[in-house]
Length: 447
Ligand code: GLU
Image (cartoon, rainbow, N blue to C red):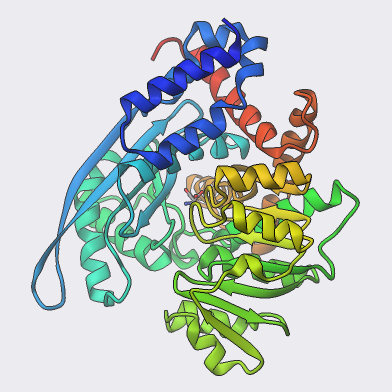
């Protein structure tokens, strides 16, 4: 059987076995449709059912998270942790707190994480977790009690050699602090390597906070350099205004680009003079308020309620908010307005239709599993520091991050060329990541 036919069969089976998990189907399809030529070249992968095994999570945990709000009312959330693949190292991936979280989202993220983590070249497997808890508007005390309850079940299943969670949407250094505190308390162990994204004052790595955003910009810069371009003087828009977006904006500005737009789930900020980053940080990191506030303070900027960020003319677009935020219509608009590069800071932010538009227009398109791998790569550097009880400087860590992003770009670029699709980073990223995991799985036998 030819590789592509076998892939179609595998995909049909994935849909049958995982009904109602649209995001998981989408993530699997995006990877599988690039692997046909790999199966043709490597019949041993088909013989040992490597793809079939990769599509089935090694383990999936769903648990009740009861907690009490500030009024004393009992609330119940659903918690998840999916250990998708541990061929290359302990399960590794973030935890997302957002009302949209259900098994299909956690599995899509966990599946992506397998290949992303393999691309970093560091010894980490793929996982994801979360809860359908909405942290928006919750007090510090409520967040703490929720994190403590979440960890009270999760702690049985994690550990520095087993599964190492970190942050994602709705989970930052504050939440990691509460989670770590509870883990330490109930296990009687100061096990730094059990979580990453910790505060640098108690075992965290410098640059981890900045890493996803910085890394996305480094990857985008590499894509531009490969085309004889640079970031200096480019007009950019960055969706979102969370941790990834803020540090993508910071690095873009450091490299001489002009960022004129960002967003949150309610609306868009357009600031022709360039986003005032200290103001954005104050509003999002300290006051934790909506970005509409930005336009009330910053003269010359505009807030557009439910606005369309991707309609703002730009040369570089970085989607750094969430899955499927950039559809085919938005992609057409970006291309028509002269956009030449898209680097995904979020996970799967572009719909399949949007990806097709970018690819047929021939613009540089860096998929999340390659472009945003700097976050988890720096988590692996945090694990390295914890294991050796060391703490690196900001400069040294950032240099490592930069090198890792350059290597990921080079590996994807060269592999795309080898598989007759020059400039196609989707093909490059999927094949590089898949082959690394497949080789380890082959070596381990049927497990
Ligand atoms: N949630 C991040 C991601 O999507 C980071 C995961 C980690 O650091 O483990 O890659």
